[in-house]
Amino acid sequence: MSQVPLGGLRFFEAVARHGSFSRAADELCVTQSAVSHQVRGLEDWFGAPLFERTGNRATLRPHGAELAESLARAFGEIDGACRRARRAGGPPELAVAVIPSVAICWLIPRLGDFRALVPGVAVRILYAIHGQPIDFRDVDLAVVFAERPPRPPGMAVTRFLPGRTVPVAAPHLGRPETPEAMLAAGLLHDTDASGWRAWLDAAGAADVEVAPGPMFEDFNLLRAAALAGQGVALCPLAIVAEDLREGRLAQLSGVTVREDCGYYLISAAAPPADRAPAIAAFRDWLLATAEAVGETPSLPPRHSSRGLR
Image 1 (cartoon, rainbow, N blue to C red):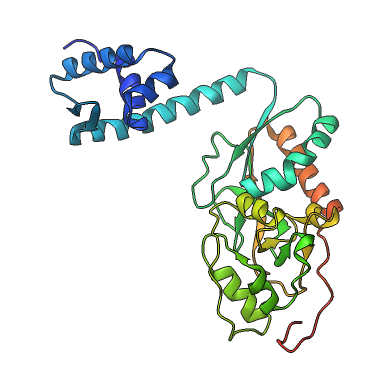
Image 2 (image 1 turned 180 degrees about the horizontal axis):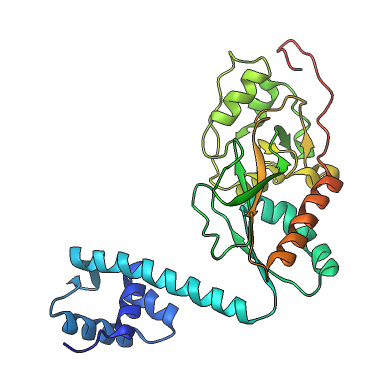
């Protein structure tokens, strides 16, 4: 049997991943006919079609889907190995995986300070997606959000920022400070209504129903809606601290929830010797900056007929 046509495998994987010959062609910077030719050649090598073709549509057959899944894993491993080899032979580069809220609202505005402090280290910022595992073969440090300290084996974990959360809104909404006023202004939700249910209970308003409202899968979308004056959002104080200091958002209550949650910095307990100094420098800078910047203090305790405190 002739050797496996490796080029055809790459073309096939792109088609399977995108579900489209044209989008695969765009990614690979070739024509759609070139993609079709490569996939046809691969099917000839297998002696069986990998797709069911109906008009302009192509659907993976079961054995094609199995092949696509295996190739995605294999190409991911190859890509990671190549990146690690490239990093080993080049100047120091830190790969830092950060959840989007911290990356956009906290880290990126301050990243220039680290570059000025340690100019010889390049930093590559990656998204750490909540709930998805992080491959620490390709990542030097990670910042994640968790309800309790994560305990990954062989890793050092440090609480980085507190997770306490308060209701905030754009100032032009007129500071709706009671549960009734907040509901009238409109509640903005993250993935579900559980956050507002917890806050209303903590505020002594357990009898108040959580009003429906827009839901946002990503914190940055939720924050953007609050900044635009679309309603009241529950946001971590540490993440919206600059918005509060600059007057873009106003804190509406001293009642907080998610006191036990936090943002955690994770790195290898024993990093590679050639990377340890850069990792330590970035880690120390992050923690020192977090301590220096702090968190905008909560409003003083309040009392009302609804039991706000």
